[in-house]
Length: 332
Image (cartoon, rainbow, N blue to C red; front, side):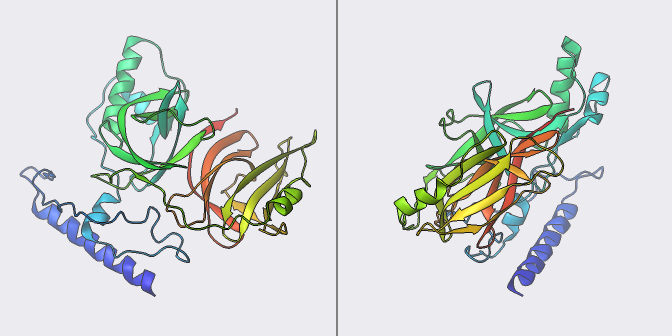
């Protein structure tokens, strides 16, 4: 009931914002966003990074009108296109304005965030490069100068977009952050509006390590073979201290994996990774985005003819659910 009430409040506030924007429309029918009233930033504690998405463990703050506005990515510039840019724009797919979570990885030694794709090839002529620049400028909701929040094991930092480009079929935004640690292949990135909050270190909640000998003994029962691959992550996953996946090395439409959660005393229980239509996973890394003591995981996800990277969080006592993904590869 509380959640329904909050959604209703948010809807009313959003309707009020839209009404205000209509009242400030300039002659000619367009809306002058520069003259619209903007809520002044309030110096307050940083709100939880994933509010209302894990209600069993995360307190939910009341939604105000500024938060409603900042929840959306800005609208793309939407300028007119011509020539080769028109055809290119028809094949370009950008993230929706409602998207809050992204994935970043090192691309050509530069931290980069996945923000879309372009189907089909991109020419190498000067005209093609000019057309690509035009499409990225006029059609992307993400532009240079926008600030996001990069989440890593050691804490969070502001990551500002320095430019847009492509890598293969993916459209990427370059980020002005240091290179990732070797153990952090891919990291989740969050859009929380502007201005971005100050970087902070993660203060982790207490997590009793458990019986390390018993835990390792349980993990050792699962071994690699020519037909199966084993991945292990050690961390704090609710009442468990390790996560193990056993997947077949040959991927078919019928392929499935075993997910095992290891208790502090070495006992085990079956778990589940809810990752849309991706049934197989290589476990990559752990991080605690909100410092609540229950860690999120980063995985490399597989299905026939496709693979992607994703971040998942615990949504009940034995299951993890995807909240971010990116850098999908289609093998045609």
